Image (cartoon, rainbow, N blue to C red; front, side, top):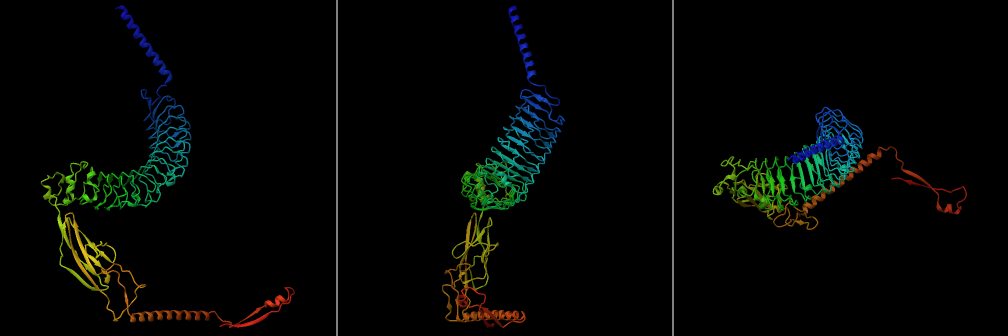
Length: 608
């Protein structure tokens, strides 16, 4: 028993000895925690924030890995300020009053991975300030007053992957400013005073994968703005209120998978700049005054899966708008002016997984039946669409309707053309004719006019469709004669009615009119029923035209002669003769080219 007690005492004394020895060794290898700092030895962190420090404290433990110097009043970083902290991984100097960073201020931080200098008063970063940071991966210099990035500012940061330079006063970025950033993956140039894309500077970043612009003074994206950025996958542009257009080749050379242009002033989807982005998966054009998504024009974006257009001015998404997008799975068009969304806009509704349609003035009719039928397979993000323009269903969530209620509630009425009496108009050549096509139906039918060749007519041209659905034929020509067809269509079907037009030629004054068959045939503005017509000319018309032409020519020549007469009189005395002296060739030959005497001859000319 006593032997056991003795052994136990020896073990206790040994443990105490080892603990004391460890404390002695630790105190010898690690310096005490500096004043105004808090040390966490378990993670080797030194927290000196809110310490009212004016300079970096001396005597920092050499094995420190995390150093927090935020919320102090440090104004200057001198050369080789941190040279003893060779193991430091993270340095945070945010929220100070830094104005000056000397060259090689961070020299010796050979292990540093993260450097934060946000919310200071820096106006310029001298070349060489980041010397020695061979392993730095993240640099945050946002919310300073930096005016310019000089050439080779970041040349020592070969391992840098992320730069945050938002909220600065940048007005210029030198062409070689980003030289040396061979590993850079993400660049934020937000809320600066740049008025143009720094294209030349960006060409140095061949490995860049994500580029962010925010609150810049851009009014357009010129052609080839991002050339040589073949690896860029994500482009984010936001809060540029003057950005109205994207030039046709502004995105040329990019292979983007994600494009965001939000809170700008685009009035139309930039179809031409987008068409070559065949790898695009995500497209966000929210908070732009875009009114229409036209049919078919997005068909080149074969891999597109998501389209966001929230808070715009969308009035209509045309049929076939997403035709060809077989992988399309998310559409968010909340907070717009849409009255409906027809199933025909999609390539296939079977692939659709998410639909944002809330806060639109929806008319709940048969065009939205497909949404109700697929409600179990669609994610509405917690905001299901509601009826707003239907008096019967005002404010109702139509996704709650039962299958038995749907046929009676979500209905459409087939269009009907009201004025069905035969319209046959006969007019003389040169007159203007208007055909009316009044319709009714629910939803309101769209009106299309077909010409005698059954081709749709457009709202422009001499023969055009007016905004009220009428057809106008201006300065009618014989070749315009034929039957035109008015077609009224909506989701419930269509209706049509034909009209006839006969245009009489100008009466001829000769029984045998002369026709110019080959080289005097003029194409008409709109082809007629019987093909191109030839213009007739009689003898009287030709004589009158020839007389008018000869009279005009003779008058012009007479005026020219009279003008020349008065001009010559204004030149004063005119000599009517001229005497010319010359040496005959035979005389020169007989003299052999020698002698001084030369026989000359003269003759006199009379000037007329």
